[in-house]
Length: 246
Image (cartoon, rainbow, N blue to C red; front, top):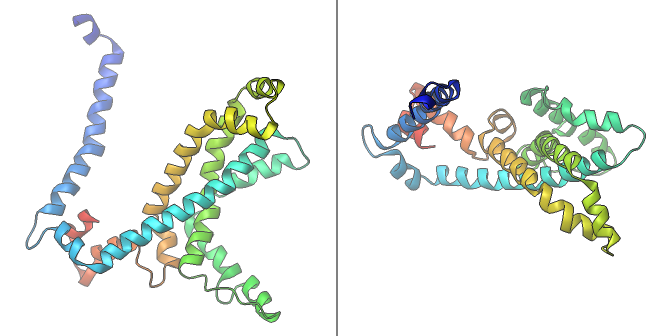
């Protein structure tokens, strides 16, 4: 036991746990404490009594679910095609999703507005031929812009999992009479499913916490990140209790 205390790995583990407690657990504890303390009703009572906050939570969960589903439906097939097939322009197609990682979300949202906003290039072109798109402010803009920004994270997570997958397992299943499509579902999909779920969870979390795009495109649609910001600047004074609860 004494020898284990002298190993560098033991002290590295202790240091890691200390940093985790200091920079993650302690701030979370302070937030939880602040949500139930302070003058007047605690934050949880105010949250349940205010329809705006409940609506913001519901809208955020719906938005995150929709964005996660669409991003997964885009990212997984693209990752499969890129990892398993060779075709002209493959290197460019594999590189394009990574560009969104270096573009700030504010710029991405403004770019979408330039194309599909009320006076966007595509919107005006369609208007001239008698077609009208729904307003890009609100659900349409939020789901569209976030889906095409966050699918990159699904693509990155899944393409590496498919690249590591042993194709001989799939070939063995096909040699036993399994159809190619069925072999992908029965052999490859269970192997890459953890990567798909982890990537989808990341997209869901990032959508819930997104502020830049939500602030620009939500318009009058209450979202959790926006109402949290509003609680921080309400009437010029920060509402710490409500901020912590949200």
